[in-house]
Length: 168
Ligand SMILES: [Zn+2]
Image 1 (cartoon, protein in one colour):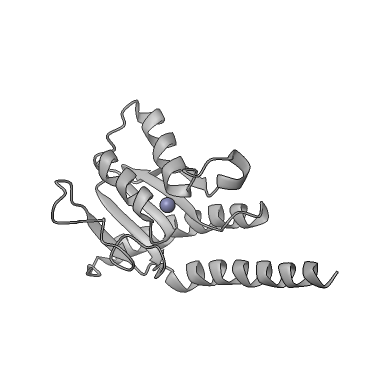
Image 2: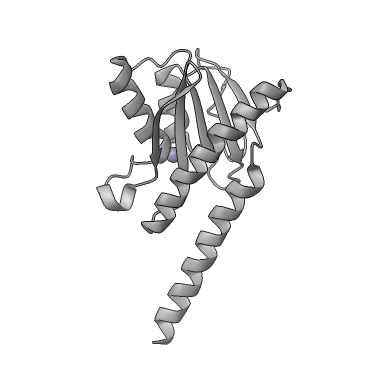
C-alpha cells in the first residue's frame, strides 16, 4: 500500500473530515462500543457519518463504515457511491472493505492501521485485491496518532474495568 502525495488543500480536507470521524469515534467510546468513526464525503461535503454500534444494535455488521455507507446510499438513492470518499479512523476490516468495493467508492482515507484485522494490507489485502474489478485510491496515516490513541486508551480502560470487576 502506498501513501499518496497530495496537495496541501487536499491534506487540509483530509484532516478536517478525519476530525469529524474522530468525533464519531468518541461517541462510540461513550456508548461502550469500540471507538471507530466513519464519514462519507460527496462533492466536498460530509454526506453521512456514523460510529461503531454492534453492541447497541445487536448487529455484527454495524461497523461505522457499513452504517455510514448505508446512510450515504439512502441519501443518494443509489447503492453505488461512485465519486464518494470514505474516511475512517482505523483501517477497515474485511467486511467493511467488501462493502466499500460493492459501493464502488472512489477513495478510502484511514487513520491508523489495524494489524489484527485490517484488510487494506495489514492482516489481509481485500482492498485493491488484483482479482477484484473495483480498485480505489487509498490514503493512510491521516491523524493516525489520534486515531490509534483513542483505540488503545479504550482497550486499556476496558482491561482495567474488567480487572477491577474481578477484584470485587
Ligand atoms: Zn469493519
